[in-house]
Image (cartoon, rainbow, N blue to C red):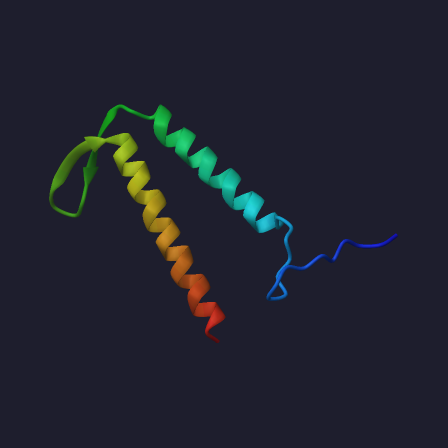
Amino acid sequence: MAKNNAKVAGGQDRGVTTRQITSVVIVVLSIWFIAVNTESTKIRFWVPEVEAPLWLVLAGAFVLGGITMWLIGRNRRSR
């Protein structure tokens, strides 16, 4: 059985990887989860207490998590 090893200029595969599919699924589910949670919530940072829409808190957590994973991945590649 022959494998499809078609490559574009630069030696990169044209196919979609499992990592890309997983990333898209996680982003879509996260956006859906953020969109359905619209009520307001209280958040306590050590001393101050802030009231904010839950979707904003979830979106902020998602963005911070993405930045953290990007930094970790970048650090691993540089080794």
